[in-house]
Length: 572
Image (cartoon, rainbow, N blue to C red; front, side, top):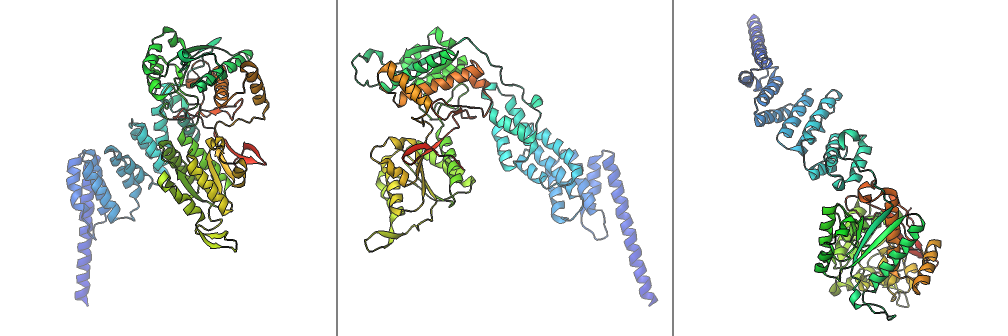
């Protein structure tokens, strides 16, 4: 018995001595670290990083070994040791500090997303101020806007990323700033504008008279006084609408001087017009309507800081974004996005089909719709590009019957009744959308169809069918012909020109009435002074809201027939 007792005492004594040795070695290594002798400290800590059941300092030795390596600039060595600590000792009570230093190491090595991932694992309140400072220092070194935008997509609550992005955007020239994004981030994170936005929006410059240059294919050499429709009649109608609006605005105290130039639908003629000295004094250029002639005008506008509206009827992104160009129409992405927002608010059944045509704009419109629809909880159960050779698939999908009644009328379909909530059609092609409408009418269920405003000009489809099949149309150019403003406009146009105003005359009038408001409220450089998200009421139409960075119109009413009357259908 005594023999075993002495043996146990010996083992215990040896263990105690061993533990004392580890403590002594750790203390010596720690002294070296605190004395900033990091190379010697690494050598002293290294044997203590090996696991030994009698060594209570393994985790701390590993931690200070990594810190010593970091101080010496051995980032990879330090990172490997910190990662080893996390793997071997997941329950260690100092892991928050390990993650803090790992975060810094990832930032040092340019691995921003990995650094933020590690930072998201740090929950201790005591470390948050230092962590915020760390993020601020490194994120403000990022000089790429798109990288910071991606950071916010991945970490939407990351205040320091928002701060860095606002600061970077705020350093840009005013005409290039994404003001809507700046404002939304400042509001969301309560950021100090005065410290971050260096280049503020300019103060409005108001004038007694604003000069507007119209560069359009008037084709004056081919015009004759005969009362027949001219081959460029739409240009003449647009011009007549603009002139009538100018008279209206003058009575409201808004004076506009029109300078009309005939560019003859020619790039060379357009370049010659741009050599006119008076063009540099214009406050706005409208035209030349077509992309090829528009390019030199856009270059001229950028050089001379002149706002330009290339084509009032166009929503193509060929004309914007551009620091001095804007669209009166929504672009195709906005049309798709607003259609999805409206549709998501109206349907109970979330299953949705999408058909789109072969045109590039159709694809852009459809994909923008799908992206927003998915975000809002709609389920895109089927999407197809429809070409002439596969257009029959629309009816195949919608009205292939599985059962009939005694009169051979289909009662059940392969696509079950009321299984589909909606169909979005991104096309102006009558062959495509007529098949969708006919298919929905044959089914006789409650599918909601959303299409495009151009359908309403198609005389081959009776308007009653639009109402029966619950067809609604995204219609940025809708004007209520029964409104007092439209009746007054039509009466004055008829009195002056002897004919009722057509689509382009109405567009020209509404364009200039919107432009007049912009000049009155925000002065000559209205494009740069216009607050983000600001809406202007329309006179004949729904109004105008410039979006950043696309510089297009964010207002897209959706219309439909009710009791035979075409009207705006509000979202719920």
